[in-house]
Image (tube, rainbow, N blue to C red; front, side):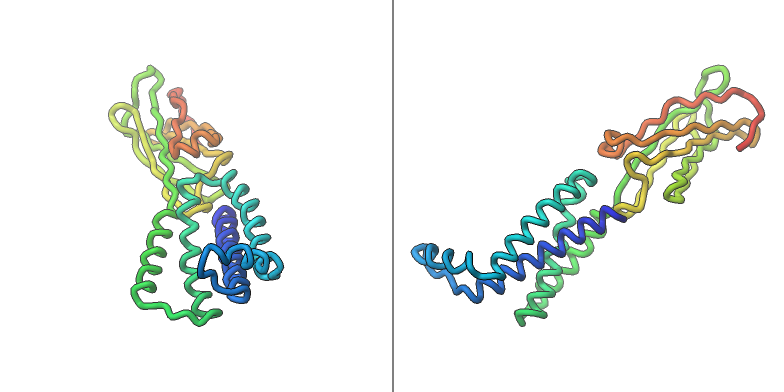
Length: 222
């Protein structure tokens, strides 16, 4: 959730920067031709709203670097479309701009898209073998992330392989450096647990391959 808040703060201040620039340029005047640019630029650099707007953009650029250090670009960049919705709302509220209904419908579609983009997918797979080294089918595999209170279970297939998919809202699920507890149980008697720390590479690929779990055949419990 912290990552989502960072992105939202970045988007919010980006919109604030645009609002300041719009207000400032409304005071500076309309640019009707290229020949006007020097005189307009001279007035703009002394307009406090234009200056503040540019400073806000400088701040959001720094914050965006923080976001990129924590979140995949393919996930973070589409989230910037939230700015369309905020800009539309504040344009109506502050500048009394008319917002046609087709633009409002488009904003709702953007909201749906942002919701879908915000879902992170993480696949976790591995194999389970018995004491004889052969693949073990029908074993129950529990994968738990205690720090996020997330747990799922599945059964191994005939080849001893299992795979689970975690789908979470941005920032609320398993993240890089989290520790997973992987437990295997067969008919209530044979039990083994290992831990696995998610690496940045695994998180970026959205795929984690757990080392082979070999059951000892001993009667143990959680």
